[in-house]
Length: 416
Ligand code: UGA
Image (tube, rainbow, N blue to C red):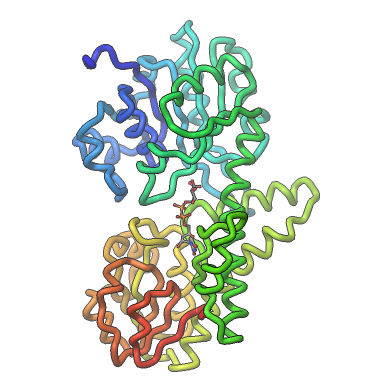
């Protein structure tokens, strides 16, 4: 296909969702204009470098036509804009819409210069009712502008693969023509496409993440009980998982869920529910259990060693393997608790040290070999390289179930 024959779309916000959306549609043959506020991010993308650590992203960037820019004016070269800007949490857990509102207003302003139709697609995660109640009013005087909701289900570290091979595509619409437009774009993806109203699409995203979080807290609670009974929770999960109605995924017991999405979305849904006068009991407990797991890990450590003045080695700072992201990583509450216990901390992670350093500049960061010399070792992320370590003769408290770690002379798993 000649360059000029490609259709152009624009993507606003080039974080992991935006970049993945941009590169994913790029691989599908679209020409992409990416807009972001961060000059460094733009410079990197334009040099073919990925600003985030994401499997396959840098290679894919070589194969696509993506131009990153600070200038909203470039959006005029496209008819569809995917909005992927951050929607961070307010202190009460509710969603901060400042960036998203700002981006929609900027678009509305920029698109003054356009007469033909333009579709804005909300990919950012917003609580049910937001698009209808907050964003649609911003375009009410502009009949050529339309909005759809199209939540993403991209796992960090596997985002590009999840984009290209989605389990489902959700299109929230208040206008069938706008929905048709987006439906057309997703025709070549081999998965069910569900069309709903705007707020149902928004809720599907929250319901999905809340359900994943619930499975994890459920299996962690069962694991806490099984540990007391001397039962292996991983065998229990295996036995449960053979039941098609239950399935195997998200039943790996351990220190709990981290990352920017599961906790944040759970809290946002709880905040919305409370604002409507309904106390969300299950969600509240899912969240509470997740907060408690790190404390349980410290208690297990204290069974074997008094942390004060001792060197405690931490293996894993990223919230999961395959990413350098430390947002809501379970390593954060563990390090905070160890500092309170006046332990000396030595930490290692193959990718996430620079990000963790910004949160905890004063703890010691060391090589894997150095960390292994600590008085006790705590495992918080199941990086494959931690399965190749010799743990013999060591005190190990495991939050992630590494099979090799069981060779330690003192071994204690959080749920097993
Ligand atoms: C999550 C969802 O899985 C995606 O579908 C969703 O699109 C994304 O949030 C989002 O809202 O953008 P992600 O945050 O990348 O994706 O993380 P997951 O791979 O789901 O893992 C979350 C946490 O749960 C990790 O800390 C992981 O270690 C933990 N986990 C996962 C467990 O403790 N046990 C499990 O069995 C599975």
